[in-house]
Amino acid sequence: MTTRATLPAVDCDPSPEGHGPISVWGHRPIALQRLINAAGNLLFAHDVPSMARYTAGKIFHDLSKPSSMFGVARNTLPASGYLTEALAVAVKAGGPITDLGKAIAEIAPDLRWYRSRTGPFASINFVRGHAHALMVGPGGMEERDDVHIGATIMAPYSRFPDHRKKHPTVFLALSRAEVRLNDDDWSVRSPGGIFFSDEGNDLAMRCTGNPLLLFWCQRVRSQS
Image (cartoon, rainbow, N blue to C red; front, side):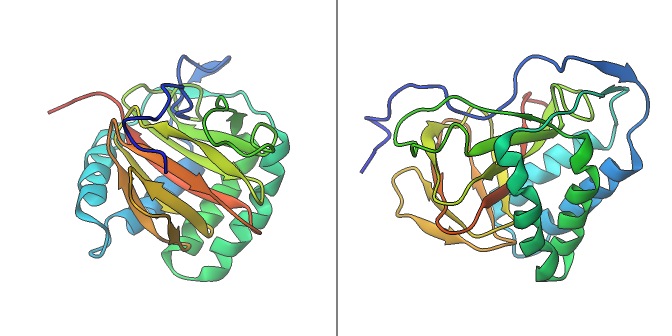
């Protein structure tokens, strides 16, 4: 088992850096606001783990003041082709997760996809078999540097490299996903499952016969 003491210091964290290639002045798109509202309905439910709900509260407080810069670059990667299949699971689930799945599908044509580096324990199909999309953050639909909102898609039978989180991150599963936090055992997260990984914590994730789709949000700057 990989432990915190032996985890190689390879930067595989998918947190975005820098800025998108093209951005313009404007107002938050209505479709993006619908996504933020749908995510909030899930992340503030009474049964959400306390640290996940607390961190989400900080993030959504920051989001209450929209940025005035918006990215207009878009692209696709091989793994982004699994998005429709993965979102179908969320849409069929019913309830608030259906609303989030539909909201992501609505903005999907405007997303910019990127990859993170490979690293310890990554599957051989990892490089082509994964992609991240940023909705809010550097290079996202809404350009800002205080919070990130994004999603990670992985092809079936993929494993993301074990890595250490740069920022406190709240995850929401939109598909079946297998996750290991620090030295805990692997656990299965069903669609709608929410978990939290703090800055400096170790995270591993993988999937079997289905594509993996995780929605995530991060608070980057330490604010009062």
